[in-house]
Image (cartoon, rainbow, N blue to C red; front, top):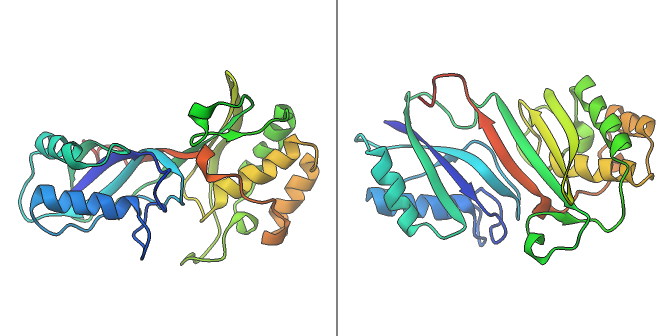
Length: 247
């Protein structure tokens, strides 16, 4: 039987989602706790990978077991042994062929920039001391919806076979002392959001024009993007599946 587990986590002390040698990952901790609760070896598959220091207010992972589970009881017992920076939210029984990664048809990320130095936000927002031109940043962000190939904003490493993504939304909004970038797409490339944010910030600083940003997109040249924005400002906010899957 297959189950989807919805979780949230603060990624500050983790080296990303995926299990890797000699580094603590969210997946490693989750699988270990699931194995203890279910009293059998469990290997989960996530809806996507987050990098070192990146957070998730909604992440999904699927795993298989032989017997039916009491969803509420599993979530309760799991939260008793998970560390405080990982929370189990919900557990859903799904068809045996459902896949947390491949069945997701949209994902949303948020990136937070703060203009006020705040020690309580140091691990959850990128502190930028200088003002940014939000209007120009949004004009540049709007160009993303006109393109599909985002080779420029991808890391070379990984098993990616193509660099096409359909971006449905890309917008900056002011929220109190913070500027929040919301981007929603059918898929994201490794490092894509942070590279996009770093380049859009250069537009906001006046280092790049909107026209130059558009040229960077079409260049399909990774060397022309700006440096990646810091990990602490980024969080996976929402993962969307076909209606009825998580009933």
